[in-house]
Length: 384
Image 1 (cartoon, rainbow, N blue to C red):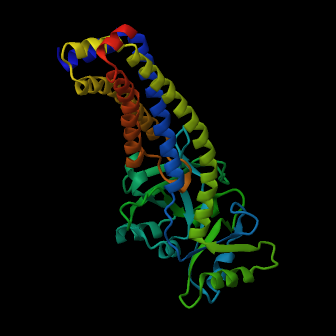
Image 2 (cartoon, rainbow, N blue to C red):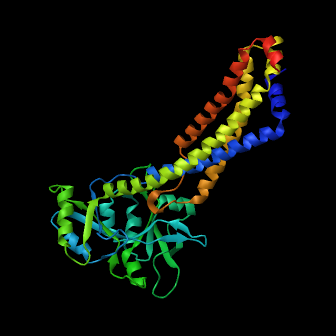
Image 3 (cartoon, rainbow, N blue to C red):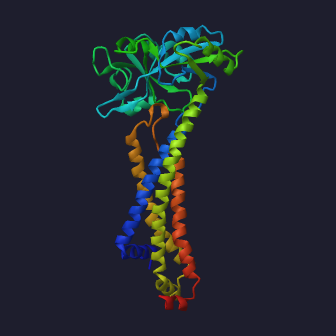
């Protein structure tokens, strides 16, 4: 009798029970793959770089706009080396409203502050010279099949055009990369003037300012100098390191993610415990069979290997298929929240899932089989 023959007999004995166990494992690892990947995106999607960049926003909240005149006033502060501004566009594409992280920026100064953006000089010049054009990150270009010269149409969840047209039309002037090959390029940059002239309300306002401070000023001194300019004004500001702002944002997401993770982990563990208990019971039902196999010359190691292989088939195959379904679901989610980046199943999630599968297979098969194997053949036959 070959191992394949014995495994086929084992799996075919209680088809419904085996099917239910495999379905449970499939569901468990589908849940694990999706939510573990989402949590990884929430905790690691924002790249904490640019430690010297300073962010100036309204003291009221990040969503409260600032007058565009603050741009020139901040630029005049002695502690400021170079300043840029940006405004959230709230972009989406298609009837399904697929979100795309879109920012309205001042084209020259923005790329001086964010010097990590890389694109050919000809494309940069074309963008800076055409208000109706945009720069598209390489990630979005690949995802949506955009090329330089294409006309694209975006919608906005925030801004309405003065002519009441719901569509914003742009030409792709360039496709940019990042100096760091591992960084996500999930952003679209459009001209602030194009947004400001066309929108129906809140003209001459911006979302926030970002600047580099001079090297003879500390970050705290530069922040205090900028905020002092607008103290006691109608729109007071709050200036912090960009890194500190992102770290705070990630911590808030992490708190929400921890709650979700706790609930889903409990469900995941319960499903696996039910599966493990069912499989362990199925093995203990074979006390007599194991005794007969030992009586006719099967070694303990071979019996353990057979039971472990059966557990692997029942757990690993549906587990891997469940991870495949999770990857498919993640591919349809697109971007989670604007600049957080696309949700992908990383190597850590995959290796963690495989480790759990192997550990579970060993736990539910080897331990019960070892307990049965220690019994004398006569005792095992009498207990059956």
